[in-house]
Length: 272
Figure 1: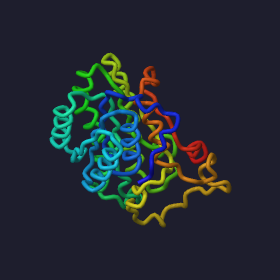
Figure 2: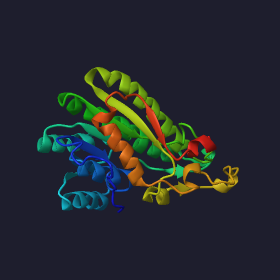
Figure 3: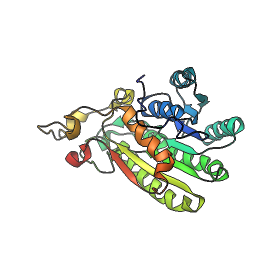
Figure 4: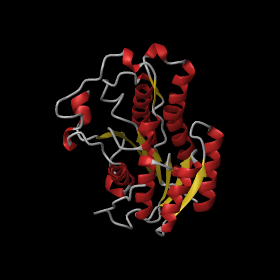
């Protein structure tokens, strides 16, 4: 687990607020959960990976923060409803939702992807985002508004050169469209909805990507200066994404909604 550097971020900037982080047991979700807790938020850490979820909650409570485990599958409505009820019973409100849970799924030529493999990626990434937001809206309304942050990707929204990524890219493009429409619908309830689009971030999710027959496709373009201009090819860190999540969760972004923000070191500018 990387320590989350909360430099220049006021420790009490989210005091009194309650956050829900899906996929909070690892990577960007874990980094965001730890940072928001450091800033005073009480954090519901939702994940289907019990070990990772426990690790995040333990790290938060060990430093004096407040967090609870919410075991759930984001693609299952009943599971999410039970988690939100648990959070409401404990803390009585919800102000921040980071819809972060996702999967890279299978990367393969279109003709080699089975329908059930396609559905698995859409169920976690797109259906999971829809269900997370849908289930959270009543509680956000009762709290007087709030901030929803959807974790999409540069792939499928600005970059289309990643061969084999059709299922993943489609789910991420869908998240972006969902975020824009939902922002418009929710504006009258003072619920802001924004989408972040990370580039290559060093997380364990990359190691879980399944591939099949990618050698039959053309090679992805290679560039002499590396694929991430700002860092000379080095991947971003989950903590850098957490800082963006904090900004969108805080009152500093209270006039920003229906917007996607790319956090990729100019990767998508080069590789679109």
